[in-house]
Length: 329
Image 1: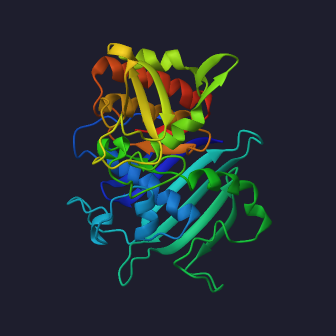
Image 2 (image 1 turned 45 degrees about the vertical axis):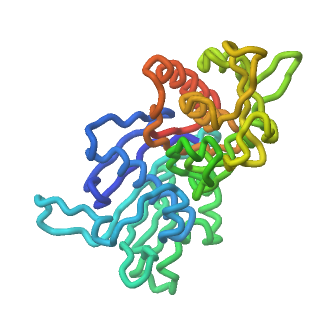
């Protein structure tokens, strides 16, 4: 599956915006210019395509909740305000060569926290295959998207993207969550939006293969080149000798061996540099087989020095392309 175009209409600062995404999409601009709004617009589109849209579904994707009026564009230059938020996604099924387009028009919540579906439509190779709207004579629940639940056969081929797009989330790792001292309020598989359960996810990636210690498809030594003070990374249950009893911890912790310390002393992620945890988090998103194939990362270079950020992004992008994922950051 390959994303071809994403369009936003009347959503916050995105009054009439579209772009053609690649595998790796880096959004550059001044503070407040709308970079995070694009990530949230994709989250809203993901919720609309795969679920009903309400506060819970948006929060699970990392979208900030706003009042009803603030979801819609309100530029001074707009003479006549639109009544709906308009979203569109185009993609290609790389196996069959078919091109699809999903359009949805939503009304922001008023009496309840649920958004209303004004209309939905699906196109295949430029031809409309399916649609529903408020004007239809067929009685439908306007608070539910019908793209996934309508049993019409013309929808089956297009639904392959829904399983991928439904897992979209905006990841924003937090140091305290990565260290395991506070819980992640937005848990997903294999890691939460703020970095929860990172140790458990890394445990799936670290294994010995043909006598070599591997980190997913990378040799562990290649990962250690980025975390140059570490001689080893492993996952284990917390031990009294490596973490203070008053420090909250998870069932599994990341343990590091420091090449510059006597006897290669081990310590946990609680005492490690936050930059090392961010590197492991980013690599986990790019490499773990259960991580979303379409996702976003907000403030990905937090806590990284420029040289480490450059090297980590090189490896991260290589893995995104290798695993045929799409990332927005």
